[in-house]
Length: 282
Length: 254
Image (tube, rainbow over all chains, first blue to last red; front, side, top):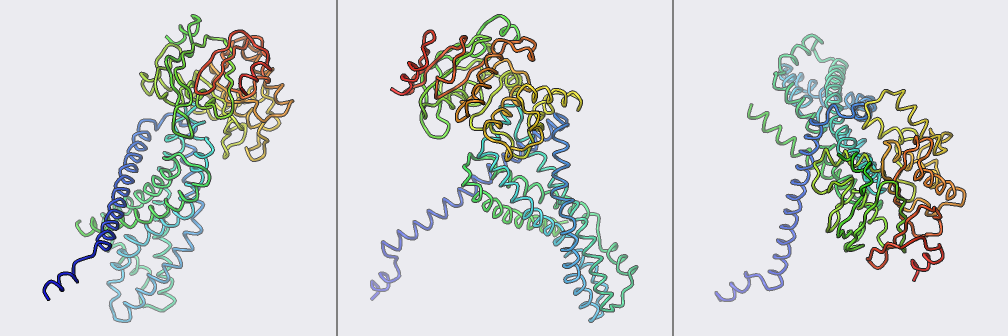
């Protein structure tokens, strides 16, 4: 009887082989993730070193390219960002204020809004918008340039592809997401008040904005800026890495784009979690 | 130092026991290349399709590292140079890629040609524009200055690649099958232009350029100053004298 129980609970040879296969696959997956992280870390370091060492080199070419990236990832997306901020502001901020006022807890509204809009919604919405509109295009552009040999043509002309193609994107997207985040916060908070005003919440604009000002700490400004810039650099590094790092054919470009977007999303969630820990610690 | 070498008629490009790695597949394309190119020489490197001509010229131009051996440009071993010195050497060597010269898709013809000047020369806009205008004139691209790669046929894109490579006034020009797939008019233009480059064109103020071109069809080339070499079955074979075109084409095919 005891032997029967033992036989029933022990895995058969086939089950054990399956378990080993799963573990092997999981192990290979983990190793791939580590290798990817290491390669992207190296790519980021090279980019930062090139950006610092060559900031004034070929400024006639690189500085306009940075401005073009800011225009593409920032200015061009402002209208869409404003619309998104207004809609989300009404939904999130307006409803929060409205609900809190029903229970006489308007005084907590500012703390909730700072936490939701300034710390979370602003940077992540700006980053998602830029990732979808510009990040995917980045991979396609750079991947196509790589597949058609344009990157090698740049090298033949003595032009450093990291300096000419990657640095403007990293700096431009970092600054653009920072600017878009600020606009998002302003639009969301204003539209939120508009919704509360329409719902006849007993809160004057003066009270509303002074509550907000009181709830904001200096750390919020610093971490907001850091978080937005980090999101921008993350998207730029991942998309440039996926587009440029490995030799590719034209058929590989779409796969590289989807890979890059998936990695950006995971990276942004992890980065967001890291900043949440920082908020909790300080 | 490099100027001294090029002036003193020493080799501008030198390969010692070089093996060339294939670009798009594993394995060695050509082995044991020992070759010297002196300033002003005009070399035509022929070989059948798949013989490794592109890998060979790209490696000899210093754009890829050889599998084994030493490549020297202007007397300096490329493997021993610092990043700064590699850049300095690279600006003395131009390269024209095959199949349309790899024109930058995002830029117009004029922007493509201006890019190396804006990147490397501390010139004013007027100086850059004047240099671009001159380059477009000599390559007959002036009417196409505002066009992008999508608007241009391969033959014209190849000329953009040439104008772009000439922008920095290199001393040595590598070309990877510049006439492949071009119709007769374009081919005649290229032949005349490259002959002029070697003899010292008036627009280059008589400065002679060293030209090294890969081809899969020797019959395109008749320049009297040309020297020929063959890449076949992984071997490098300089050809003595100037064999006539049918003979060389037979060598390539056999």
